[in-house]
Amino acid sequence: MKLWGGRFEKATDAQANDFQSSIRFDRRMYRQDILGSMAHAEMLGRQGIIPEEDSRRIVEALGGILEDIEAGKVEFLVDAEDIHMNIEKILTDRIGEAGKRLHTGRSRNDQVALDVRMYTKDAIGEIKALLAELVETLIKLAEANLNTVMPGYTHLQKAQPITFAHHLMAYVNMFLRDMDRLGDCYERTDVMPLGSGALAGTTYPLDREFVAEKLGFSAITMNSLDGVSDRDFALETMFDCSVIMTHLSRFCEELILWSSNEFRFVTMDDAYSTGSSIMPQKKNPDFAELIRGKTGRVYGDLTALLTVMKGLPLAYNKDMQEDKEALFDAIDTVKLCLPVFTRMVDTMKINGENMYRGANGGFTNATDVADYLVKHGLPFREAHAVVGHMVLVAEKKGVGIDGLSLEELKECSPLIGEDIYGEISLETCVNGRTVVGGPAPSAVAKSIAAAKETLEKLK
Image (cartoon, rainbow, N blue to C red; front, side):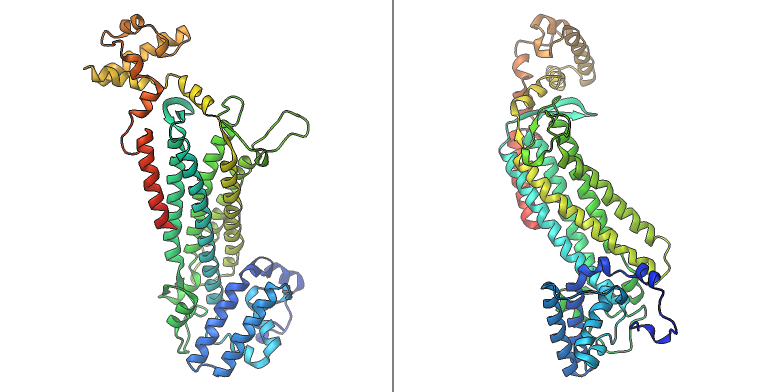
C-alpha cells in the first residue's frame, strides 16, 4: 500500500502510477533529502515531539542509507513514486515503527521544496567555480595578447582597431556579471522552507531555526503558503543559466567565424575539432557549434517552467513536479558546456599576424583621421564628411587611407600634414585610446587588474 493510501479502496493504475512517478529524475536529490530528514529528525527529538531514542535511530539509519546509496547498494522503486517516499520506505523497512515517526510535522510539499533549494544551492556553487576557472583562463590569454591588434566590428563590418586582449576582457566582464548574478540568486535560494507543512504549517512546536542552522541556511521562509509554492529561486537560477549560455554562444559564434578560412584569426586545437565523413580537408569547430546549439535547450527549460508556473493557484499543485527536469537539465547543460569551452579556448592557437592584417583593411583608422582633423580645428561633423569622401577616393583606388599620397589627402582637406601617417597607424590608433575601459594596452592592463580583484570577491 502507498504510504498515503489509507483512504483509498483501490490501487493506483500501473500505467498511471508510472506516469506520475518522479523517481527517474528526482533520485539525484537523495543526498539533500537524507540530510534534510536527518536534521528534521534530530529537531523532533530535541523538541520532545518524538522520543529521543527514535530520533537517534532515525538519524543513524539515514546515515547508513546514504552510505549504501553512494555505494550502489540501493535500488529505488517506481511504485514508491519519488525519492522522498523511497527513502522513507527504506528507513521503515530497516528500523520499523521508529522510521514511521520521521514524517511528523512535515509534508512532502515542504520536503521537496527543501530538497530542491539545497540541490540548487550546491549547483550554484559548482557553476560559479566553473565560471571562475573560465575567467582565469581568459585573463591569462588577455595578458599574453595585450599588443595583439585586431579589428573591432559593428554590424559584423570592420569598425576600429582594438586588441585581442580588449576583446577577451569584454567576455571576462560578462562572465563576472554571471557570477555576481548567481551570488544574488544564492541569497534568495538560501531560505529554508521546511516547517511550512502542506500549506498551513503545523501545530507541533518545531524549531525551524535549528533545522535551518543545521542545514546551512541563512534564513527561513516567513509564509507557509509561499514556502511550499515558491519556485522563483529555480526560475532565477535557470535565467542565470540562460544568460551564461547567451555569453558562451556569442563567443562560440565568433570562434566559429574566426576559425574559418575567411578570417583565420584562430586555429582550434585538434582535440576540440572534428572532421568530415566525406571531405578530407575539413576541420570543423563542432564543439563551439554544439555549445551554441545547447543554448536554445536551456532557453527552452526556462520557458517551460515559466509556463508551468504562470497559472497555478496557491499553494502546491502536481504541475510543480515539472520543475525538476527543467531545472536539472539547465544546470546539467551549463555544467557540461563550461569546462569544454574553457579547455577549447585555452588550447586554441592565436594567429596574431592575420588579426593585424584584418585590422589593416576596411578603413578601421577612418575615425582617427576625423579626430586628427578635429584637433586641427575642424568641427567633427565636417571632419566626418571629409573623411567619408576620403574613404570613397581610397576605395576607388583599391588602397587604404594611408595608401593615398599626401597630395591626394590634402585635396580632401588642406589641414592634413605629413604627420598624418604616423597619427593613423594601427598602433597609434590603439595605443591612444587610454580612456578607462579602452583598448590601449595600458587601459586593458588596468581592466585586467580590476577583473582579478572582482573575481576574488565573487569566488
